[in-house]
Image 1: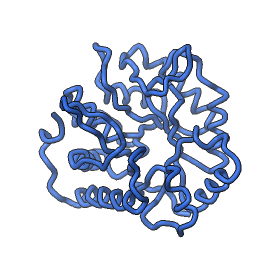
Image 2: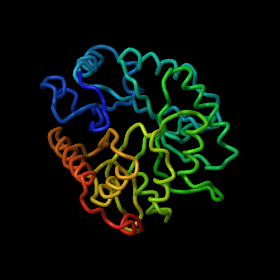
Image 3: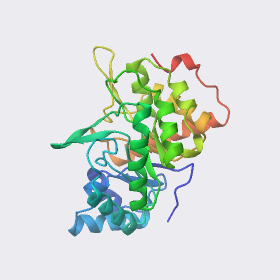
Image 4: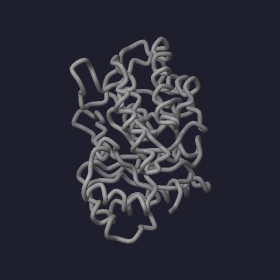
Length: 288
């Protein structure tokens, strides 16, 4: 089976594509698949067998949705232990979730809410991250989320992430579309945020599409093709941090598998061509 290397490219494992992935030969342009462990950990029967079949052909990355590392509730140790068993069963080296909170005392909120980026919160987050890492016996990979409000008097996002990474030895899932969306909506410079991040700690990249509403506000929908502006920011990201595995996210309005793979190959090829000396757009064109 192929291993995941810095030039690898992949897509999310979605229910609409499972039958085709199971019945077709291994696709030469899919180097890995990403799945949400919450959707698979308690599943048996034919669906479980399908996942085992897929795992024989494609390396898997686990991208969680409900860790809620930044909330004020005790960590769900039983859930984390279940994740660890799932990772071991399917030989998954990389487990990511979001630097966010998605629970309160009432339970799960089914949304990813930003954490106040304040220095006094970092020790709390580091302790929780290290607890998770002790259980899963792997670095925890945390993604920068898209957000639509801030708390005021916060550290720059890049500095906040860098200090957490340095103190916890966790890794970063760098979502390029989220940086573009946030920089547009919050009017900050994406280049400064990107340059503040430690390259060696970036495990892999996400890229996705977004929607612009009538008020020129961007929504991170994962429901359409990736816009050229995001591809251009991805080229800059690769230039600054180097080549890392790239995952094309598409969660709704899914096209046929071959169309999704074609988009992935086009984006990946354009970015790698940039690495070989094509002219890049000026920094001022990347954000509003």
